[in-house]
Amino acid sequence: MGATETSQKGEKHLSEKTWERNTTGMAAHAQKRKEQKRKGVEDAIPALLREQKPINFNTVAKAAAVSKAYLYSQPDLRDRIEALRQQGVEQAVRERITRSTGKTDASRDLVILAKDRRIKELEAANRKLQQQLKVALSKAYDQL
Image 1 (cartoon, rainbow, N blue to C red):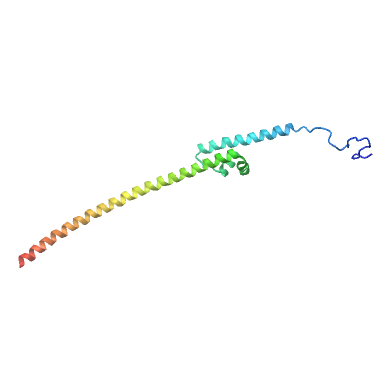
Image 2: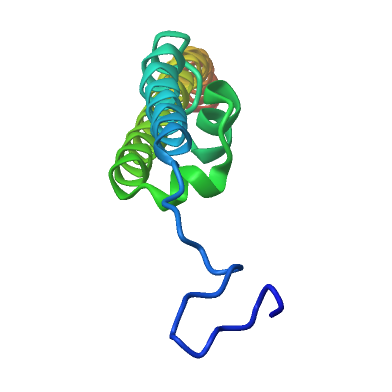
């Protein structure tokens, strides 16, 4: 009889699996790696926030030493990163508006001061010309 043959009495094949594989060690190791990845991401996000670095999938993946695919595959992490990314974008827009408004206010004030100065100069020139006109009209009137 060969190794894969069965006898006529219904005995099992010799090549059939007749034992249970012990995979508990591998499963425990996989679970530990999974927890380490999650902890790495959970630690990386606050670190990036403290350093005031942008929060997005690239920066978090690099800081936590995980793949972007891992981040996208975890719904809770994905939602958290997307929310923080959106907050960062909104904050950047607010800062940009604040900075540009500050410059606009300063330049507007400068333009107003320059125009006020020019108006005063023109008013003074206008008064001087009106005075000269009065003198010229009085001389013309006297000559009549």
